[in-house]
Image (cartoon, helix red, strand yellow):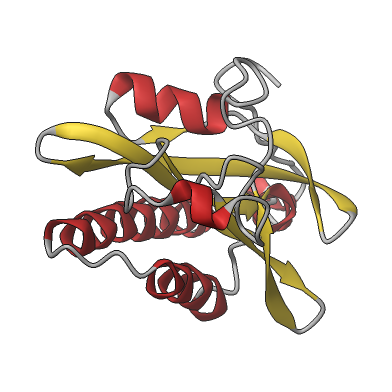
Length: 186
């Protein structure tokens, strides 16, 4: 029963991420370049999935609409105007921020691994800040394609506390205990 709950949480995150990547690809193929529409989609994903801590997307420079310079420094963008929105939980709603370290190997692997491999990726648990508070999450990421090329990555972050609560409830033979261990042994 508990294994099914853990598998359901992972499957839900993977299915959602895959669907968002395909939806963003479809919007791009339809020449929809309204960034507010892309942001609305990501914010709604987070609002509809209360088990996610963040929903985000990273696009290659000028890959979305060729208009990055016009968005330099605006919310959900960096100083280059690159579209890097990150919707995260804040109190009882969600708020828009921008992603950090998305191009830095190591800390940016949440984006880089899916981009470089071209495959959906489930990452090791990692620490992040959500609304100014430390949290540990696992990340599911998927590449966004356009005309056969990878133009970005989208993903969701799921709090490890949710999975930990499921695992802590496991009591094999009423006296045992269970633990979760990542692929790297953490």
